[in-house]
Image (cartoon, rainbow, N blue to C red; front, top):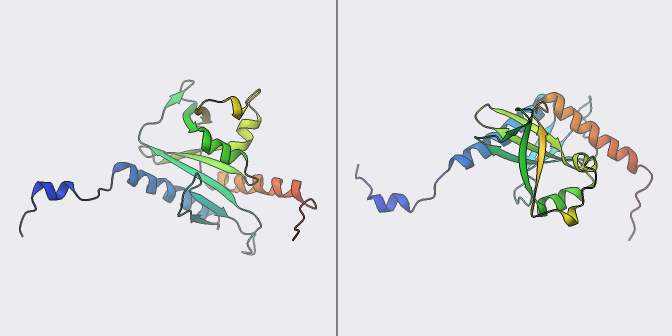
Length: 178
């Protein structure tokens, strides 16, 4: 077999570590959802949402609404408060989009080294931040994700309850007009 000249190898596309851990993060979330009997669809054109989570009742019938997930993967978590929180910086345009969503937006930070993920319910987090104003925020905003918010089947079912609470608030208030 003839050897390729070194210049030819440098011209090829490469699968980087970032690509690998991004796929591992999606796989991790998908597995947790599947263990609940739910399904996940990857968003092909990603503008701040990577996965859409769909849930089903005990009879296997699809439930209304969805949960939106944004995944971030890293080999090096930035911990704070003696390892109790993950510090993660979010871009202002993403926050603007997420905070205007009706459906829950869940940020998932996947620790590739530990094969573990933690999560944050974005809208609820910012509602609890006294005095937070997106218009006055900088280009990035750092959030504190509790390391105890482990992404597992229990967390996935919790996301469905968040969605259901939102649906309950909207009952009888939505009109469709032409």
